[in-house]
Length: 397
Image (cartoon, rainbow, N blue to C red; front, side, top):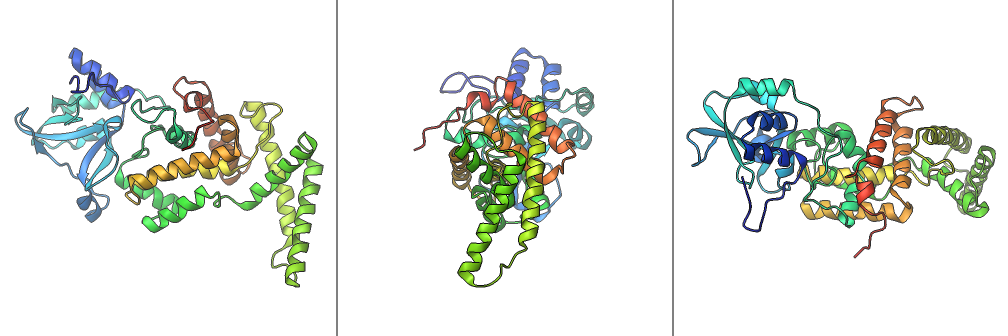
């Protein structure tokens, strides 16, 4: 442990700072308390993992600093961006202690880094630390990562989801789990099993095309009324205007084609009118819970696509469906798209949460809503929140 050739070592997160301080002081109980309360990542060969999906094998190695075999683990802040033939699988100290191979005598924590630490293998003690481990703070910042530029802005567009998952909001890769876990999540939630599927989903999100168009249609109708009259319309005026627009659009189709529309106009009108009611009820709850100001309304739900695009960029990199340049480009595009529509982080957040609730919650105000309410509180109040440190207006180029 110590300084680098370029000066004093800067810990990337609070975890590495805690490990460094405990190690320098020889406070090994404190060292393992920190280690037990955080995710650990095991380096593995991508070729091996791809050949045996779902399997996990230790990769013992020898180091001249100690006698005997070692097993390496890395904390999240010390992980390099995904590249090459090495991948990382996620675990933690408790399961590690249970599966520890008897022939291995050393645990190498962050080997090859300025904060590497070799500790004797004592799985029984590790289990005790794991049992009393305290949960980490949900808002996690990579102190050495992007903090206030366009890249940070694009990363912060995914903060609601990242903080909800308890992972670093501004890390380029590995923001969910390890390599296999990331691939499995993409398959389960998105049906993505390769690069082509990732590209299609990523582009759809960046274009704002993966949310139902009826949501954005209704909100745009209201936005036009607000711009015309200076105030938000009532429910009746909003519904009547939406119906007139749908009728006018249908008439245009009939005039151009000379044929009846190939869609159910009455169903579309009913859908829009019901949707307007849902939006108004959600907004009333948002105001009561502090997600919206008393005189504010949701501008657009495209934030839900852009926020997921921010997350998808990093999952694509972690799953090796894209490279670093592609992930960075997607993050910059997500931030730029959000800035074109929204005016602030609270404005963006309201759109994201409404989109999420319209998709998942069905007006139950259950976990899908309560999770966002808590994360919104965290991002609105904690000093390291990107909503308080990353300016909304970013100079591009």
